[in-house]
Amino acid sequence: MTHVTHDFGGKVPIKAWTEGVPVESEALRQLANISRLPIVRHWVAAMPDVHWGIGATVGSVIPCQRAIIPAAVGVDIGCGMMALRTSLVAGQLPDDLARLRRAIEKAVPHGRSDGGGKNDRGAFAEAPAPAEKAWRKLRPGYERILARHPALDRGQDLRHLGTLGSGNHFIELCLDESGAVWIMLHSGSRGVGNRIGRHFIELARKDMTRLDVRLPDQDLAYFEEGADHFEDYVEAVSWAQRYARANRELMMQAIIEAMRKSKALPQFKADLMVVNCHHNYVERETHFGEELIITRKGAVRAGLGELGIIPGSMGARSYIVRGKGNEDSFCSCSHGAGRAMSRNAARKTFSLADHEQATAGVECRKDEGVLDETPGAYKPIEAVMAAQSDLVEIVHTLKQVLCVKG
Image (tube, rainbow, N blue to C red):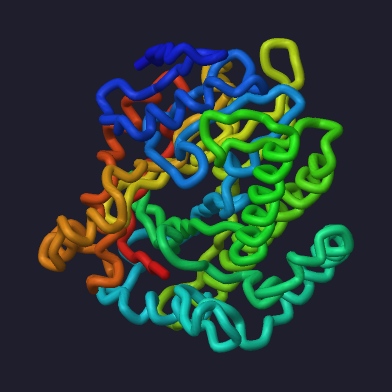
């Protein structure tokens, strides 16, 4: 498949890898607004999982010249995927995976309760030693940020390090095409990243108002290089991305230990192939001979030979992919299947019976609390993959047998 080009009369066109995949009109309107910004270069790239998002379009790749749009990074800064292949094979898994799911759920705090307060089940009551060690490396950078933005000094930070969160974040055990067992997870920078994102989105809006900059959408407020808050945001978002990567690594360590201690499995190795990639982030990159600030909101970098992860829904296949380095997409690919409907629409559309049928054979939650994440709420992952065949090649195809949801 190749891209189609849309011209909405903006500063730049939109190149979309959406052949065979439905795209909602609201997402196209958001993309059109982005294309009108004076800071955007070349074109906006839309991935096949593109859909309307808060602030900016999910599944968008935005190349800016000496500027950053905080809402285009979003509030789940550094959200991404981690997967590793173990030496286990399908026949070594127990017939009943409920024991393994309970072991993983006990090892990794997940979900949210108490309004995110001190009794939140999604945070550690007392951070374990590995999280303490990781936090010692992260804390100096955080304190530099707080020195200039003390309003951020609230909520959880250390106690969220090594925790899953809620919503579309998950932990899975999967089988690949050869029957090898993989561990895969999806999470980001948790509460501290959310606070950083919201804080700087609001500062950008205020700056645009003060400078009398007219925007097609208030959410697309931006910082230009040299502006009051540009360097502060660059430092803060980079720190949150490091936090997110460390968060995934800590969870993966805890999952491996929990699986080993469960006594449900034989001894195994867990480092045969490892991938850890962001899909909500910003980075300086060179494309078409110039340095650009590339924002990927719901997109994965797919440079030539680079490995990435494209998950399906909690009842569908996921993919380990290798990038083809397609410059038309700014070396990017989709970050998943992409939502086909809102969470509220999913709750109204699907019944528990629908969900149980869609997740048959998967050890997972089958209650009303996860109806908004049921497979039917997402686009067909096979169509999404077909639409980006010129962006990535499939290395491994994974199918989950166990899923932990927040």
